[in-house]
Length: 480
Image (cartoon, rainbow, N blue to C red):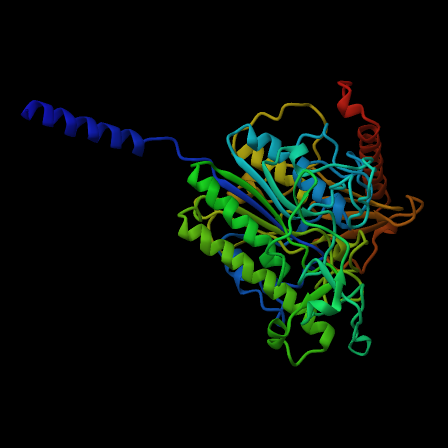
């Protein structure tokens, strides 16, 4: 009996010891992105009006990126770059409401699903239409599958998404009348509707499955509506002992901005339009705090890598600000592309860091691939670079330039310089971004040799993107 008892105790100790020596679980990964949030719209970048305490707290726990760029000056193109590591001109989404995410593209959720991750996408999609049965949002309509591309076609297990923009409060509704005296309009936004009997449908849906629209728990602040779906997804992943990849693309503060009187009260000394705009950002921030609290409760906070950014600069005609930078959304000057951003991962990243390393949303995929030691299964062109050494404070200068295109505009950004043309390459300007981040002093005329060298690199990159857009990357033909 004593021998049996000894063997039982000894075997128990061995089992517990083996459990303690198990390989640590891969980090959970969360990509958070706001819609049209300007570089200067957060407290951690110096805003003194808009209250973003939760974003500021998380930014302080990790690394703030002072030179973080969206891959495009508008929404949809940037979003695709986050998932593919590639410039939007390679996969046929040059602007908003154009093209769709092709199944031939290799995406982060596809790669991570193969590593045992549970994958979910919540909030805005904007990478294709979500229905062929009903009229929906900007492009969805009965019988049209031209740009039909839903998240489960690209590696996601679960989703809760809209095709494009929606009101940031009571997202399925709009008022029949607007207080135009106070600046309300269908485009800009309004104070939340108090009586739904006076409202009408906005004209879009939240989709949670193939031709399956959500109908419950759709009232109130939209960021909360989104987070109400994120948290159960995370809880389920933790229950399954699986790492999770959660993309949270808030529609805030894209127009129309809507907030209720309680949200607006903290900004009562500002104009009606400012109250609505500021309040919806603070409401989004509150939900980020709710997410972090849940991660702490589940014991997952330290092993979760959270990336935060915006998809482009602030919309024209809003109180949003690009800080000291030139111009706004739709521009390839810094104010249209440089956005607020940080990464927090308590297990691996020290708190209180700031980096001036030039980063672009296309860097997400190669960074995560390297951190997880995943073999990328193709030789197609990747525009991003791994930031693993940047997160470890081991790299300060970017070697690979960042290319941008939008309409007739193009630019080429290095560690020190920006070459930019706004007229299809007819003329070029040159700025030293280290000395002149406001882009006030065009030094092209005094640096002809540098301009010509950068121009050749830019045009070669454009040629490569055009080859990708023509299907070269999908045909097995070596890339240009």
